[in-house]
Image 1 (cartoon, rainbow, N blue to C red):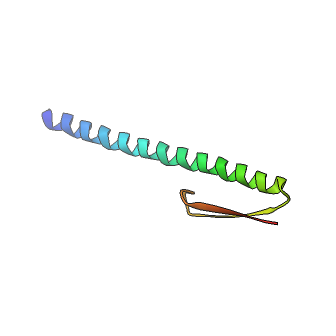
Image 2 (cartoon, one colour):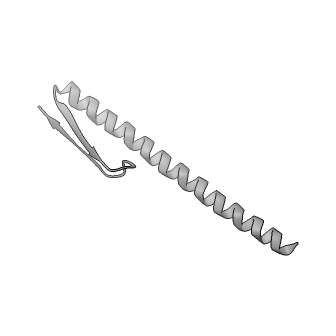
Image 3 (cartoon, rainbow, N blue to C red):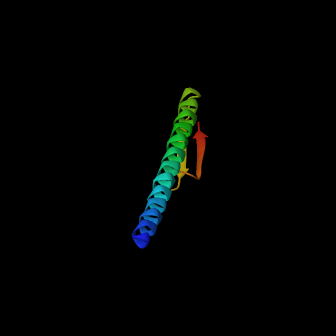
Length: 67
């Protein structure tokens, strides 16, 4: 019975870790998306054309505003 309890605890910790990791990555990607959209809109308001480069999750990104 003790072995089953330890396995359940370990599984719970692993699942909690991955769920937490999923939310952190999702939240970071969402806030980055909003930052890119705000920057793009500011570029359009300045009569420019934004060029956005970003990686898969959007952690690293750059925006240039070409007029």
